[in-house]
Length: 503
View 1 (cartoon, rainbow, N blue to C red):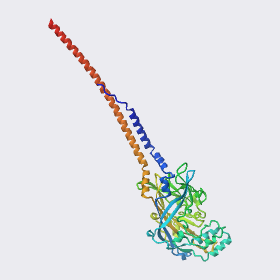
View 2 (cartoon, one colour):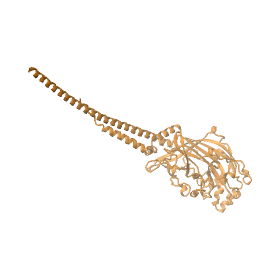
View 3 (cartoon, rainbow, N blue to C red):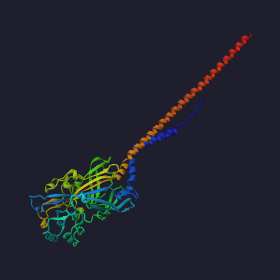
View 4 (cartoon, one colour):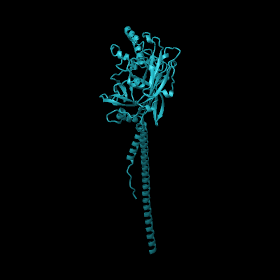
């Protein structure tokens, strides 16, 4: 019996090998493929989800503000009594923000402005915007400081005009923050155009005209992730490549909000409130909602103005302060403003020993940014910053010639940002890409091996069938031959018998 011949299994072998090779390639190049897919997604382009989320963020941003009330201003010149402060607050604000005036440029950058609204929430606050707060009198203090560069006549006139002005001022919180209050010195300065770097303001407040403004933060030019640009990198601010500080301290090329392909050792962050790039140091790797994230904190790179790193001395337009307090005046019209962590956390102890009321806490006053390690998207932020004013003797102004040198804490605030659940879900899907690629590679290798094993089994079965077929054929031939031989002998015996009988 002739058995049916099987077709050659080589096509199956070919497909099996392709599947194994493809699966192995995906496994070996999983990181590169993941980055390619993320690069395709993390691009700002028209009518994309990421553009919508970036321009109208759904993340919740809350601000807690604490103001320092100066309780003993009458004892300023009493060397045996330190200035005493009590912390008022928190005053809670919900921040709403969006991008406006968005324009895509031919060089693959995008130009835009930030618009922020601050909504006071009295139910979550410990106090109201009408709370009266006593603080260092900002305008006279700043004017006396700026007069160091004026001519003799101008300094003399200022010295006379400041004789009856108190060192402190008591104002409601709403005027100190947003509404502003009038000051005769501001009015006078508006009629003296030869005074340099004088703000064009009819009132003073720390955030005067900022609430809802599209002009306050300036205009940004940022990369879209296409061409030779990097998504999230700010290349220009107010159409300039430099900020308000000289040398490398004025560099603004850093990231905002999105940090793809970031360096793990540090985080370069541009903030228009500082008019420059700031650097946060890598702290540790944490788990956030089941995803790996890098935590960066405000450390030596943020708080040093030359104490440990001489290159940071370009942050100082005057005498550099000790570690922990960094000059801010270049961003605030030259007034003697300085930034630090709340309650002078991590700062040189001398700033706290000259005053009373500071209670630094690592838990409450830490500044950090947590960034998803896979996508570079910020998942949580807590930026706690304190604004200070330097009071120091000025021999050119009579009222200030014998005041003590003190770094006055004014207020501090904490900006807290967390992603919403829908955004976290989408972020988890992006973080699932390498796991999905690993699963796909495993499936391809497994299927390829199954196909190869099946093909080998078929090949062995075909060989076995051919061997059986050959054995069966040989057996049939031998049996027929034996039958034929047997029949011939029997016939010969019958013939022989008949012959013998006839005889």
